[in-house]
Length: 282
Image 1: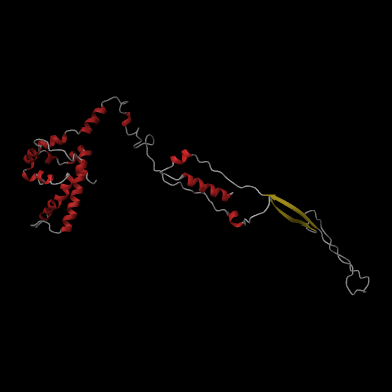
Image 2 (image 1 turned 135 degrees about the horizontal axis):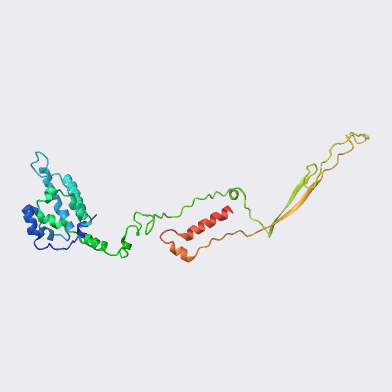
C-alpha cells in the first residue's frame, strides 16, 4: 500500500480547467494542498505525508464544544497516519472499483453536482475494454475466462501450495543394528565350532541315554564305592564357515533432477540421508 499515490499518475499534470471546476463545485476551500506545496516535494506521496499533520489538526473543532485545533503531537501523528492510509485506500478503490464506489455515494449528494456525477459515471478504460471484449467472439476471449484460469474451479491454471522440504514419515529405528555388536574380523570368513547335541537331548543325532547303574561292589581293596563307574556321555560337534560379504546399497540421482530441485530442496543430501537409513535398516 506504500507509495500508492506515487504509483497512480505521480507525474501527471492537472488537466485544463480542473482547478476551475473544483473551485466552482467546492469553493476556495477545496484546495488545501496547493501546487506550490506539492512542488516542494519529489512525489505527491511525500507532499501528502508532510501536510497531513496540519490537515488533521482541525479534528479538534469536530466534537461538541470543540474550539481549538489539536495540539498533542502523538494524537496528531496517529491521526495523520490513519488519514493518509485511508486516503490511499480510497484512491486505490476508486481506480480498481470505480463503479462500486460511485454506487455507494448518496444519491442526494450526487444530484447536487451534475458535472461530477457525469464524470464519475463514465466507464473507465478497463470497463470499456471489458465491454469491447464481451461483444467479441467467445473463442477470442476464452483465455480470459475465470474457469479457464482455474479461478473458482478445480481445473486450469490453479496454483498449489508446495511445502519444502520433503516430509520423511517412515520409521528408521534400527533395532538389530543397534543391539548386535559389529566387531572387526580377520581373513576371508568367520569360522566357529558348534555343539549341536549332547547325549540324552535327542538333538544332534543323540538319543535318550540311560544313566542308571546297579550297585555292585566287588571288593574293598582300594576303599572306594562303587567300584563300577557310570558310562561316559557323548556330544555332537560341527564347524560353520560364514564367508564375509560386501554390504551396500545405491540410490539413483541424475544431475537433471538435482538441478531441477534447486530452490526447493537439496536432493543430493536427501538421497544420501535416505541411502544411509536404508543401509542401517538392512
